[in-house]
Amino acid sequence: MKQHLGRQSGVQTVEVSLIDGKVEVTPKEDGQIDPAQLLKATYDSGVTAAEMDMTARGKIVKDSSGGFALQVQPNRAFALTPNELSKGLESLADTQTMVTVRGQLYKKPAGKKKADASAPLKLLILEVQKKE
Amino acid sequence: MNTRKLALLALLVSIVSPVAQAQIKHIEMRVEGMT
Image 1 (cartoon, rainbow over the protein chains, first blue to last red):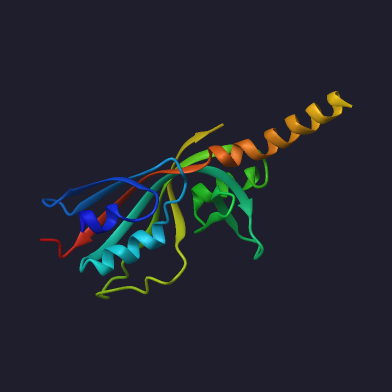
Image 2: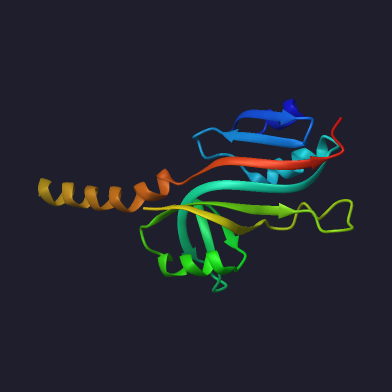
């Protein structure tokens, strides 16, 4: 799996811990990394992803459906799952303020062996680390 | 004329650069079935 993930676009390093089942991915600074592609590559390597967390820096934007999203690249944004933390960031929408957040992009639904990997990933903010 | 071009360039940089600095810094997964 390590080699499989390491071959994905935008991936710099992959660290796998067999003991606790953790996989840490450090992206390259080229911004090409695609979490959905990583999730698919994980499935393709025969392993079930239970959870995926991401730390990212970006801007809060309002999307076409009226929801809010974290824009991490000009062509890549993650819709925010509403919670108390995301509500606290709504006032920053469409401003130049950059935020660094840690959040959950994916969690395997209880009882299911495998979730639909093609579903769009939504970001549930767990921690706001920085506003600048 | 040059001053106007420089001002326009500075404006464009100020608009574009915050997004350019945006990035995914780290991804962590918990997986099952790994041997």
